[in-house]
Image (cartoon, helix red, strand yellow):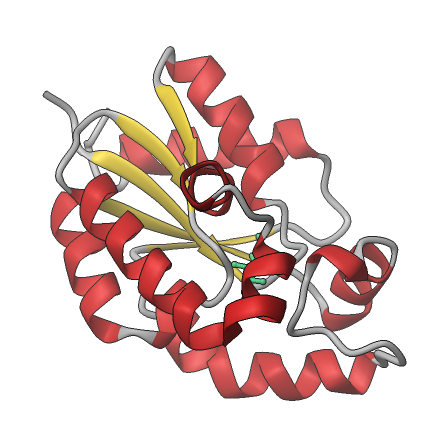
Length: 174
Ligand code: S3P
């Protein structure tokens, strides 16, 4: 049984696209935590926030973290805020290797502005400075990952290669 590969990172850093490809390359099952929460609750993440608030979303996220951590051999894309709860991170870390995707604020801004409606924490008149502020607050939590990968200006395949190489060479987990 292999350890899970857990992808963390701010919104718009490519966790879902990169995770899908890492899973394909390693013939593993891919789990996108937010999509699983949506299936389970029958609501989109935005709807969950709107109707029941962030607290409800975070409690669904916690349950999902427990569920994922009880399994093996998965490639998991977490939601960008998973790092806010240390218990979630302890649990996920005990089940696998945590890989954090990073990107420059400007690039994140360009990536998320088109899909802002699916991300309830991003306000309507979002600016790069809002991203900078959120990143600054969360950076120490993202930095706790065992592997940190810069994605700015890179294509998905090069990021995927990098992750797989580093898991093999530095962590001997594949
Ligand atoms: C969140 C990120 C979102 C989603 C929710 C909260 C966050 O996931 O879980 O809107 O707190 O950063 P993505 O990182 O996939 O956008």
